[in-house]
Image 1 (cartoon, rainbow, N blue to C red):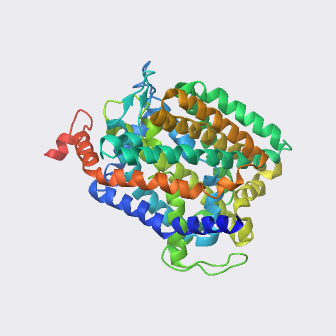
Image 2: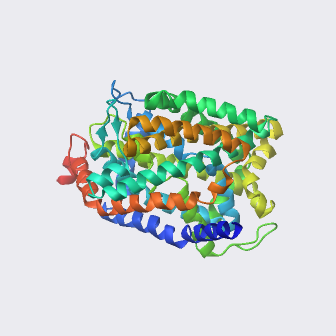
Image 3: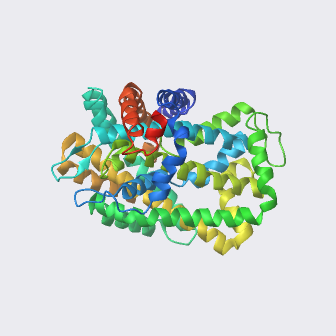
Length: 458
């Protein structure tokens, strides 16, 4: 049995190396070229339509949710514990230059996330409860005319979420343990909180996420900013290291073992891909519940998510690591602890540790809530609304078992299941790229949507 598990782990490590990087980054490059790198060309306008309208209630009606509520639900899933612990690992093994490649991959990947949401809105439907539903399963079936790929995506994501929520719970339980809260109690509390929220449906979920996500993001970013400003003299040198070692090897120093340019690209690419879920197809499941006058208008929030998750939160974590220099002191096997130690170094063990602990717990809790919603929608697509309620119970049980340390066997299949979700979604996005391009052009060539359109035409 152990030999079988070792083989699964070995295959998973290989699959999520070069093959998945090629699929995700290659697909994102295709989408970026196809759309004329619009995410850079129209970046100021996109930011004005997202950051500039964050708290607008526009589009909020009785049969749907507002665009911002939809994006906070998607962000709740995107912004997780890995935004805190994943970045220092990338720096320790890939050097400071990994941060540069993380930024590049995020900018490229934003085209894929945008495309997923455009297609999701275009092909969404209303279910028997009168709610908007959509996602890759719908555009694979109706746009690509592949019911097989649509059902494959839905089934694999529905199953993948079982070990995924258990893994997230295990992370939350470890965090709660620093406050001397038992695993069992933490598991019960998390399961109850998630159950109360998800039983209210998408409207209750978004009512929670629109308040929780801004709070937890600001708590972490402001706390990080305090620590970075305390080490202000190291800010410019930190950026210097990022740009320098994106193209030149980083020499070993102190506890840091050094890293080649290839390592910087490999680890930066991985962090850029994992930090914002571009290509995974989960974001449109939340965004399809929003009321919007055009698919592109809602899809711009996907780029907003990439900016918040990768370019802001992950960058703040990177600066925590580099301005304190802890990556040169802490052993590689303890890299995940660097952000907490950076906070404690400046704010003290109680306040500093408390901010990281609370941030981690909220990041994980919000992720679990939205993952359960995603899983329910896959079950609804495959078997109907009644079955989705059964899967909800399955997920709540998985949350509880995760707190006990159960389901470890399933963890070994987590990355393989995720690959079976990503591959059909990326096939759909790439093959439907002309539909995305047409909708993008329809929006940006229409002065009703894009005020500068007349000037550009002239």
